[in-house]
Image (tube, rainbow, N blue to C red):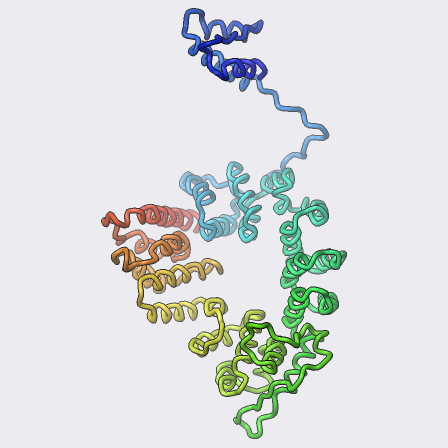
Amino acid sequence: MKLLHELASQVLLGSGRRPPDLPEPPGNIGALLKAACPQGEDMEVRVLRCAGSLALCSAAGYVPPVAEGAPPPLCPEERLALVDDPQLLSALPQILVNGPDTLRREAFFRLASKSYCLAPSLLPHALTLGQENHELRPALLPVIGQRGQWLAGLNPEWAYAAGEAAPASDLALWENGSQDQRKHLLGRLRQSDPGQARSLLQDGFSQLDARERASLLETMSAGLGLPDEDFLESLLADRSREVRQRAANLLATLPDSRFSRRMTERMAACLGQAPLPGSVFPLEAPAGFSSDWKSDALEENRAKNESLGERAWWLYQIARCVPLAWWTKTTGLSPGDLIEWAHSTDWSEAILRAWYDALLRNPEADWAAEFVTQTDDSGLRIDLFKVLAFLPAPAREQHWLRLLEGTSQGRSRSGLLAQLVNDFARYQEELSESFSHRILVEIKRLVELPVNAAGGLYEISQALPELASLIPPACFAAASEGWPVSRPEIEYFSKTLARLLAIVEQRKTLHQILR
């Protein structure tokens, strides 16, 4: 408002030396100001009363700007039911604002299972959550309803949720969006229409810089199939080593691809026939580097810090591109027997590293179980926690307990417990009742230790909200009781505990009302 701006300019340096001229507009506003700021009052009081009156008039008389063009279409009639339970209406805003994501997903899934959608007041925050966190979208989209899709069509940043309105904006996003936006768009299209996503990526792929080519190529892993083979084969000759390697990894994921057949033929040449039934298969690394191997993204020279010798390096590169199923089919041995056999050869590091890479590419539970139990002390650079993720939840719980029992120090135990919780949260898996009770007992024991002995109590504090989102309802009481909170030196833990208890109460509400 012009009058308020003029008044503010006059009193910017105070009103003592030069009293301001209070505005005296004609009409009702002038009469209001004269009544609110009578003569005889202190100038400071008159200025403040005048400013307050002008601000109130400005807000009361606000007229929004007139938009150009046609107004937006009306929101379609909602087909889903709106939540009307007061307790649930109180819990949902807290869940959306404070999380964690595991709890948000559970709330969305439970709402969808009962054909509910989010209240209109929650939609802006929910759509922004989905904009920032792509992993939330599969759970969020079924509960935004018609109004959520309608709102998303009015805001380009929410276009991911616009339903049928999305394709028109997709092309513009692909042409003009940032690298991250284009990558997320490709990832979404690979889920629904792999061919369209491949066509978008293929057109103009060579004009992108190496880093962007490699980054966008990652999206091809979703919906990967033999129709992608020709495009990926062409990338084996890409000028970027990283792009060549990623294309080779994708082709190795397709056991029927020409690339996989070439690699199994090379591997078969290194693996001899067992002289007698039940005897050990002989294994010999390549004697030299064949000239045609470069066309399949194999590297002749090792990196300076590579621990493998020259021939082992060639063997490793070939073996890592061979499907794990080929080994069991060719030798007739189980994954456990094969790992024992690999340890007995002269090329154990190369073969075990190759199998580990193949396992990360195509997870198989039986191979993962053997890797967890047979390679602990092998000295290989293996991320045990990645392998654990490939096991069914009950088997993972048993291995986690074994790891905990083998760890005695406070700091390492707390870090391991935090990693355990993050592992199950990453794959959105609820813990079993017995396992949850065991973990809660262990965490409470660590909290009771002296601060120096507990060591990494901060790590546990960070993981507790996720843990409260993963335990089954039968453990809600155990999660709410028995915490040592009387020691002044761990007073900071009370904030974490308060959040844990709030999450438990919110989950109780979800389970009671959305059963």
